[in-house]
Length: 104
Image 1 (cartoon, rainbow, N blue to C red):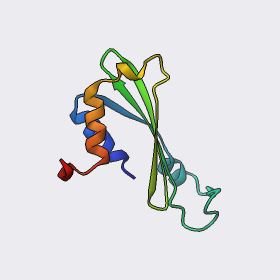
Image 2: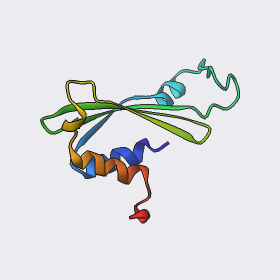
Image 3: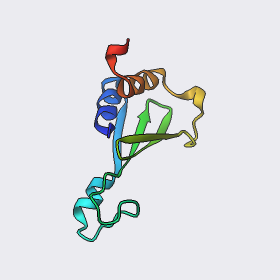
């Protein structure tokens, strides 16, 4: 899961990131947790929801969902903002988080 790396890159760009939900916290605090996908086998599912606060432009909700070494990323900008209003430094920070810096 790359949530930690996303948070680090976003904050390095001067944009605040807040982890609003983390499945690991729920799973570790509830002994009766049973994964609907893996049942009682070791669960590799991950779900983290981040709120990315942009300077004077509101916020984006980013959902990072992973399982079995795959990650899906969903960005919801339906919080009163439009795609054109996304801070360019956020796009750069996310590119750094998702792709190795050695590529550049």
